[in-house]
Image (cartoon, rainbow, N blue to C red):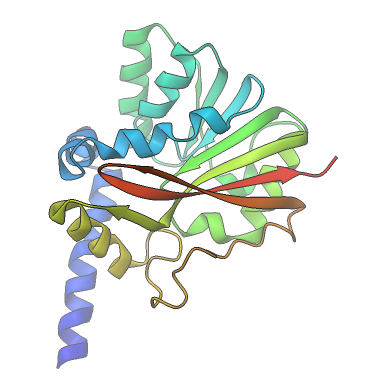
Length: 223
């Protein structure tokens, strides 16, 4: 009985989560902004001082919030997402800011870019695709030698507000963010990605302020 209730609860929240990426995409920014008391944007923008070069690809760009910041700062940035609903919101945001033609609909397993195109690839709050060797190999392919992948790792977000912790727990139960659905021993600061197998050299950093902390993975492509 308990297992059945847990499964029903998980399925309910999974439907809600999927809805945010498709029919409810127009309210995604509101939920992330108010649900996390403004911390969501800070976690996203924690990638900025860790970017190298000017050519940047954001995988899973969503509604384009971080992408607009990158373009405002004169990066040659491109955003990729598999959700047409999310990209519709991103196009509205970028068009209003005067940045058109910077979005691509596609999946990370088949990046529509030549080899050695970008100096940095960024991914914030990725779902489980980021744990795929196939995806990481594609990211390595489009990076310049010496280029880097910067990931804000949702397996180790620690917001201090009670409401934000609840949302993180929901996502963790769904297992939709990285390793969040695993038990505590598996969901630690060593968050597993097959980076070495993909040809990337890893280091880890923590972004922290008075509202919480986030784990950031930086992985560099060998020369």
